[in-house]
Image (spheres, helix red, strand yellow):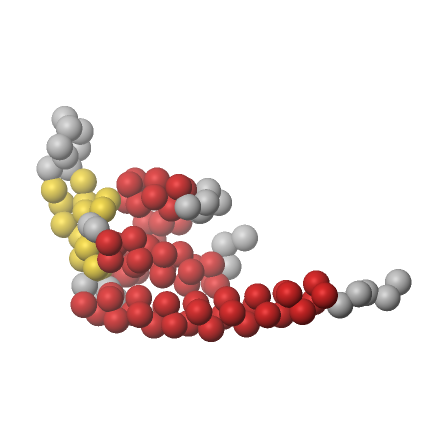
Length: 113
């Protein structure tokens, strides 16, 4: 189920979450899960985060854990990341609207048997 399209959607969703607040990988996975992205494994999130960093869309910074656990890498959206997020919003709007129109039309057509 993890296609190129899903990678792009996951990237946009991660940018959206980071636009609201900085977060670390495990917390990011939990937030995605809370919105129904249970099919996305934590092993698929970290490569996306790495790619987003390489493209300067996000930055990561190690911070001490508030609890007694290990330090965590917190990710923040950059200005370039915000610009990409705006493109994602526009692209998603166009694609989702077109797909919904198609699906609604197909559902209204009776299939000959």
